[in-house]
Length: 97
Image 1 (cartoon, rainbow, N blue to C red):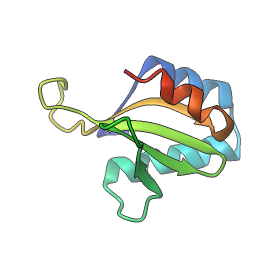
Image 2: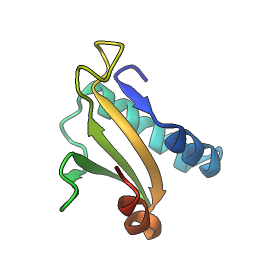
Image 3: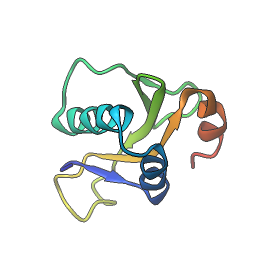
């Protein structure tokens, strides 16, 4: 997925979801985010200024734009911090830095 950097925690979250339809939908949504699709169900997180959430079924992808100084690759636009089930969203948001 060119244009997206996954944190170690996000990679672990995806491994825990395991193979199946949910993982396929999440990967498709991440590719759409990297491609700049306009029809994504994404919203900014209230009270957590740089962070956004992307809704994909029962899962939420927590991401933010990346500063040019942070990325070694100029094509990287997003950093994904977490991929969580909607029931765990509040707890995951509270851990964002």
